[in-house]
Structures are given as structure tokens and as C-alpha cells.
Amino acid sequence: MVETVFEDDRMRLRTWRDDDVDTFAEMCASAAVMQWLGGPIDREQTAAVIARIMACHVEHGHCFWAVERKADDALLGFCGIKRVNDPDATNPGAFEIGWRLREDVWGQGYARDGAVASLDLAFDRYGADRVCAFTVIENEGSWGLMERLGMRRAEALDFHSTQPWVAAHNPVIAWDITRDQWRS
Figure 1: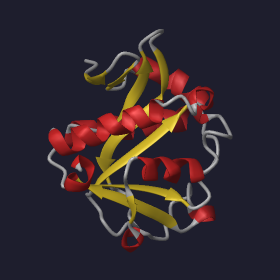
Figure 2: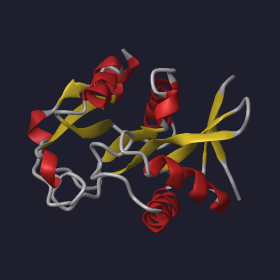
Figure 3: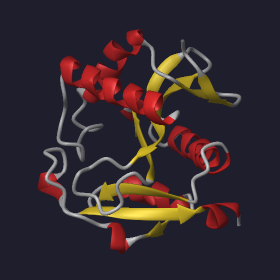
Figure 4: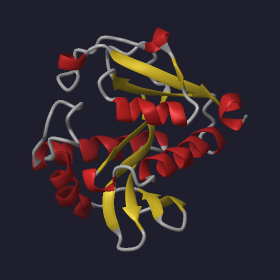
């Protein structure tokens, strides 16, 4: 059953449906979208990503939720919170926020709105004391949003990942924000 976890006048964050795979696979086949994530992936790999996201939801009650535009019910990508699971990370199990959106909606505020809602949920519903975010130095768009959200660089959480998606872009760099910082 699909659960809506956040909704405003133009978008919703919801759990994933089986029929999201093809649309999400189109997005994940984009070189621009996947530039800092190891490059484009095929439908089978995309289905595996969604399966991992759904397993996170089952285990923790939260995940990287599907971002859906309300005007036409279009799947725009994902945004949400999960638990840090990179085996090389210095803070396994911590709350992590992330997003990935279709290129044609970049700059329209969906990532920011989804991230604000996700941080509110992390602190208010899921009891997080701190939320981190990871990217690579070249991904200025991503870390720029982290800064606009009020997140601060957290060099102590930086790490070198052996995961194929990031190996060419190491190190993984981190930002974080505490509940008190988010509320101030």
C-alpha cells in the first residue's frame, strides 16, 4: 500500500509503487542525473535501487521517498532520509538525507521543499538528533543545497569509499545539522 508521508500544494513524498520502476529507470539512465553517482544505470539496476529503498522503509519506517508532482502525478525522483549504510562511512546507522531528481525539474525547488519536509520528519517523527548528507566535492549543486538548508561541513565524517559509484570522485564529503540548529 502506498503511503503519503508529506504533501503540500504542489508535491508529495510517498512510498514507492511497483509501477515506478520504468519511470525511475528513465531518470537513472541520464548521464546528467547520474554524473556523480557512477554513471547511468539500467532498468535492472534501478529496480535493485528501489528494492533497497523499500527494504530501508520496512526496517526503519523511513527511506528515500518518491517525489511526485501533484499537478500530474509525475514521478520526479526521490528525497528523504535513510540510515548511513556505506561500509566505509565513519557514522554507520546515522540519519542521512538525500535526493535525486529528474534533470528537467532542477532549479524548481522540489529538492529544497522535499529536503525541508524530510528534515522536519527526521527530527519530529523519527527522533533524529542529527542528520548528515554526503556528496563529492565536484557536485556543487548538491552541497550548495546542503548549505542553503543550514547544514554545516562535517569534515570529521568525510571518508574514502570503495563503492564503485564514488571511487573515481573520492573523498566523500559530509555536511550535518542537529535538531537545535534546524529549529533555530
